[in-house]
Length: 183
Ligand SMILES: Cc1cc2nc3c(=O)[nH]c(=O)nc-3n(C[C@H](O)[C@H](O)[C@H](O)COP(=O)(O)O)c2cc1C
Image (cartoon, rainbow, N blue to C red):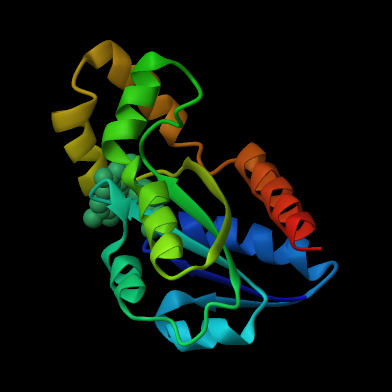
């Protein structure tokens, strides 16, 4: 299989996940790893499977990714899998964490799904994990989202570790699972 792993990453978190997917995929397939700034949608037609990653911005995929989605793909033969890093908690931890995720990162998967649906592309799955934000975004989160000091103490300890080894392992497992779906 020919696989493209491409990503939009400002501070490197999403790139780390992309590199993990690239590394594990390279064991069995021909894989190219590319910064999204260096490719266009028409390149996707050269691949059987595209892993497309984005940092979460303004509770959705980053603007350059959404802009890419607005262009009509020249071919929809490739299959798509998405991955995102975000500064929100992951939704699997509890009610508070889920509501933060839903509000501040929940649109990401929906944007992948509607892009795939509108272009008749097979969307195979979605991976997401936390990623440490830059200092201005961290300040915004403290001022606007995690305002309660007790919650902030917990959150700031948790977020600074991500993406961690576990995230990397989970991203690799995700990549393997997606590849199996294509076999
Ligand atoms: C402009 C901007 C907006 C962001 N908005 C959100 C957001 O709405 N929700 C969220 O969970 N994280 C948000 N983040 C945090 C990033 O998604 C997170 O830190 C991510 O891991 C950054 O990935 P990168 O290092 O690949 O750029 C934002 C970051 C930036 C720079």
